[in-house]
Picture 1 (cartoon, rainbow, N blue to C red):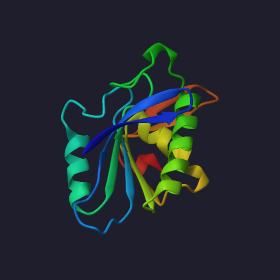
Picture 2: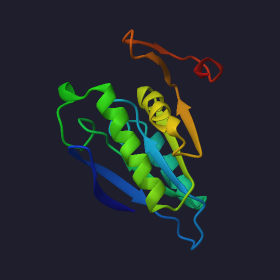
Picture 3: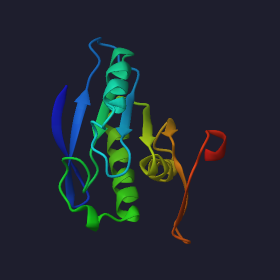
Picture 4: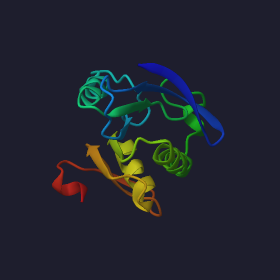
Length: 151
């Protein structure tokens, strides 16, 4: 497990990177905690998931987005478009770095933003934990209650 800073847009974001112990790696998984939550969320769900994925031979990156957790920036300066665009840039970089394929797992609003950022085909698959349906034009959010609602 290594801590590192990843330059995305105008920010340097704090990340924790986990590499599998075997020489074989199935791909890269980006883990995003809930919006405004640190990567080591209160119930340590994402940290436990990171260890599990590492044990299943994936490279895992846990990330604090700008203004969240230990990454710089004020939470009052965070805008959804900037977060989404930063995710696009990061996913593109992860796809280039490898190992491919790249997957994403997000929680809450970050799951929705991850889904929107990945629409360009930069990831093989995405899982959302309690995502929101979002209409940026109407500036409205609806928390989904089941996986069926997330479609």
